[in-house]
Length: 530
Ligand code: ATP
Ligand code: MN
Image (cartoon, rainbow, N blue to C red; front, top):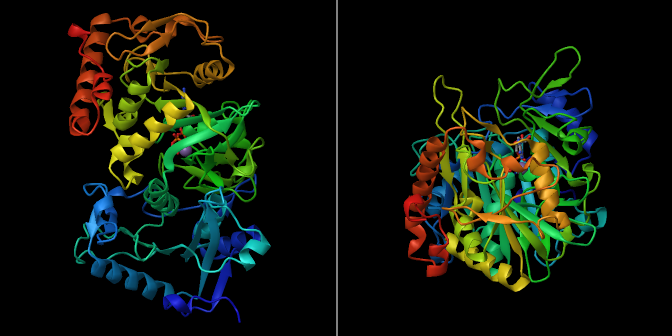
């Protein structure tokens, strides 16, 4: 009685289930175009046309059981059950014409009380190895007793959706059914879609149990003090959570329970752009046999990766099991957070590089979820673009942001957590004039949060945001701590700041009704009346 997938209408007989890394390497190298081994043994793969997620193509089945819980809109776009089944059948039909398939049976969530049993069914060794890195792999015994999974992902990403199907706006579709407990993927081979699909499910399920799911990284100090770092893509969650002085709990997805924190994932997914041994040694050293390197460019002869080459995409990535980071906390479970850090990459250069927030300011900024994107590579475009994404990850939230904000506020209050804002973005002027904050300085500021250096320093209040800005920090020149002092052109500083404040205010209008007055009052004020 071999393992089979007949219960899903899949008749393919050759199934590689939780295969070893070498087996997946061999299959990938033999069958998947362009796949190669890097000079340090990582598997270099291509995700094809899509080199990032496709948020506009995500759909959620509208079903009476969950309908009233979901925050319908641009992020959670409703799909009829029947249309889900059309895509589902399309995926199954595609999977059925394959000579062999891969299955990954593994867990999401390190806390056994909340863990999900997940099954991935996919057509590429690359996808299987990626998910084996990103999920928590069962032991042999756990696999023998795995039983039926809680959720199944049918990854038929190598086959496109039919754009005439009702509700499809492209040939890519990522469809979630909370009732069938399934995700169907068509028209994208970007592996991150699977990991963030499971995260979305956790974001739905956990609040039902009073647990706070979070788009954050987390690490823990020698005294057991946990820090969680929220932030949108590119703000530094992965980079800053890898800290030789602290144990890594995880780099992207966590939950906060009454008992403490746990990582949802078993691995990390680091940006590889400009990666260097000097600046990010822990991540650099995690790239070895078993690591999946996505969409990187390498030397034909030596197979050495050029991390500065972004000709395929800016979003080059490395996926590795968390134990590839030397000081990982395994199992990835720890106590209550002591510090919460909101990371933002403020390309306007007006937010302080480090500041302390009141609990109300924390709520306000959690709901706002601000970061900025620097202009693309278009010539002459130098204006940064503000992005607001509620809960620092609106794309993955299924309930209304207030649900998560309330959970966070309760937990901050109950545990007496200190909230900080760390701007990893621009200093000395906005993008185009100033420069990005040195990673070395940001690391020193985070060290100062951890070792209590900010307990006995003087603070100044930011005039419009109201944050408490420490005026000194070990290893960091004091003049960079207050943004205004770093701008040569003070009028430009005030101007830019005013612009950012009004963007915050405008964005918050949609949330104003749902939050209490204290939170509303904790937002930034116009400079004139500040
Ligand atoms: P994602 O959610 O997409 O995984 P992330 O929050 O994990 O994003 P990182 O992968 O840590 O983001 O990316 C931060 C990038 O910014 C890295 O490439 C890092 O080298 C670079 N960087 C430059 N300066 C800083 C700084 N001062 N602090 C943090 N990161 C910096
Ligand atoms: Mn990351």
